[in-house]
Image (cartoon, rainbow, N blue to C red; front, side):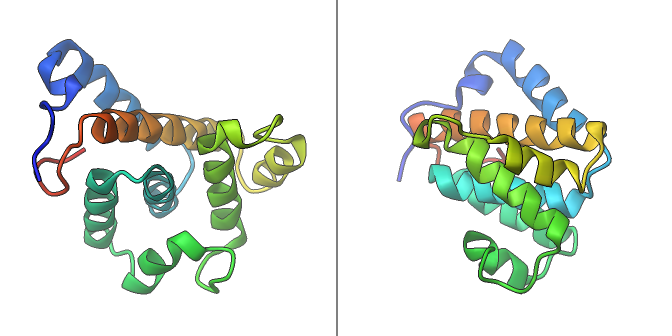
Length: 152
């Protein structure tokens, strides 16, 4: 496999630092790193971004995430491995990643459920992680970045 071009954020280097800063900022909220890693992985799975699925799984594993949980992220609703807070974050991830799937992509009921588990800073961190991950995914998928070729 070969990418079409280098990652656009590499070609246009002024883009890379702000993207990395936004990604880093998401970890400054009150959401556990393990949850943000799951959010990153789930959005990347939905978008078919092999680069981010690969790097996200590797990074989560290095941080102590279990193989059972990583393998079950795609089926989190049916798997017993996730807390209620993680489930809420994953539901928000799916809704905010699949914006075109319904007229009200992130309904109030879903937002309220997530807000039961996370304060305003945590909600901001989740939304930022979802948004930045979707940006990474779109850059990588559109240009056919190869998993393992570089870190997303």
